[in-house]
Image (cartoon, rainbow, N blue to C red; front, side, top):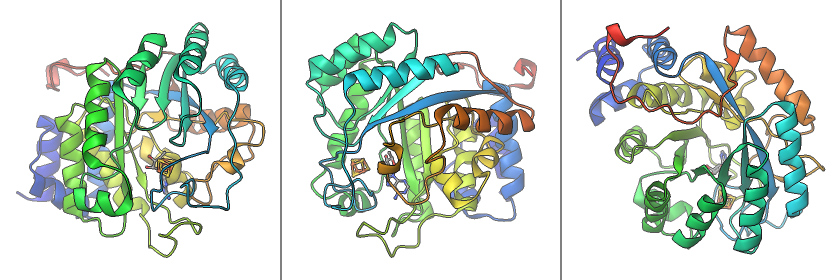
Length: 354
Ligand code: 5AD
Ligand code: SF4
């Protein structure tokens, strides 16, 4: 089947075989048509609203040693911090006052708080009438259960890559099977589950990225965060070449076509590659942006990769600047919590809602 036909098939059926995905992931000539099809699918299934999620990076302390990440335990060139639960609550309250409907609490992987204290914080934040997303790494099922009961709604845990061998090389001391287990625990506990991967890792093939997409489909992920790998000078991968914008946008477009009703963020890492790349992602299937609302000079220390945008920008300013960009492409900021609106029936022309 030629590539135009493959795009049509994807738009109509939301199903592709691995070889078909590889063909579209690697085709430069069809990229514009692929983005346009993803944009139509986005409009049909999730509409023109863009969900803003307020990101609070509450600690950069991490016990893991992911080879690509600046926060890895083995990096001595990071000034480590952990916000108190009062500070986190204050940032959440501020986020609410700026108009956010969701806060994302993100940190490196470590025992930052006793589980009871963290659960109490979640309950307090929940009383602000905010949806809560956690992104704090691999925990026990019990801990995940306690946080869900305390008020957490969603959880982000990227698989990073579904290539077991590559996963093993990039994540010393970590277990691919445990990560899968965490994702299935989170689903079973009733979280909306976000996962995702890095694009352009050393040794990662288009076939491996196609497997990532099929994996996300197979676990019925509610959200996919995918962005380019950006080499960090303080890591063992400092000399690697990293991911590029064009293949990242093709990946995002394919994610929308294959999983039409999910939430799909335009990731910050994209913007590091090129100014306005998040807007390009919003026009290639994405419908979520996560402005950073961490204050107290902590953002500068949360250096996963160099050149992270909006470092140094006030939280209100980063919301305002993205709001302007969203309006400029004829979209609007959603006033809803932005839960996944699951569509049982796949797209047919008669069910189209514009
Ligand atoms: N480039 C891009 N993304 C990165 N992450 C970590 N290090 C990098 C990097 N160098 C991503 C990982 C992690 C998320 C919080 O940040 O995918 O899941
Ligand atoms: Fe830690 Fe996450 Fe960075 Fe890995 S990607 S080193 S777990 S902060």
